[in-house]
Image 1 (cartoon, rainbow, N blue to C red):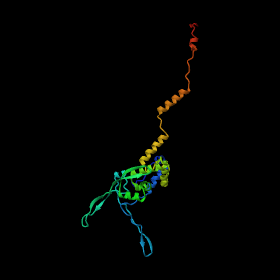
Image 2: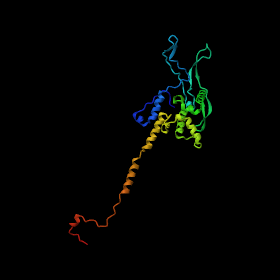
Image 3: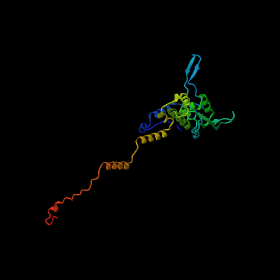
Image 4: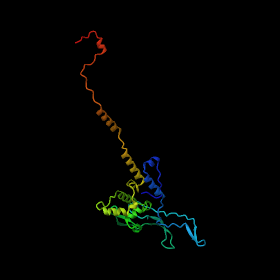
Length: 261
């Protein structure tokens, strides 16, 4: 999974290999700050009743460290993760280390774009966000990749965008297909761009190399020379042996003992 605040750096060769749409997606990913889930940022302005307005206040917001285990890639946790800290059981007791974990549950969610039910591990916050945007497909398409924070979520986003670009849903019912398309037409992008959405840098490089090899296949020299030889043999004809006797050499002409027959 692509982790937060890991900037993408590559050489000039890799930069020319990757398409512009993917590099633009990486820049947007780096520029986007994740939505605070486990902490509340302080306001930068405070009210000042004397001047009947707002006064600037310097605030240092430090995000709460959150641990995202590998299991979060296989589900949709809605930005929640593991939080490690100290807590007091009683007011007079000493603080002890504690690990806060999100409450996970498996739910069956339906995607009308993909036309199938999906059993996904989610949190209550995920279900709340799905209800706020009126549907599972809207949640996947509207939520930024940084806030999805899941390989499963990015893969579903890519599949939905490809399905919208190809109109590969409800093929047996054109009226229903048009209704679904009109409902999500604001998210439609080209198929070439949708294929790169949500790919990690490693997967994007693997895909770009495969496309380059497919466009410019590497032919072994043995096959190349064999093909050239076959073409040359097809164009040239073999000389037939001559029926005339071979010409006598100069020494044979000067031989005085030679008798002509």
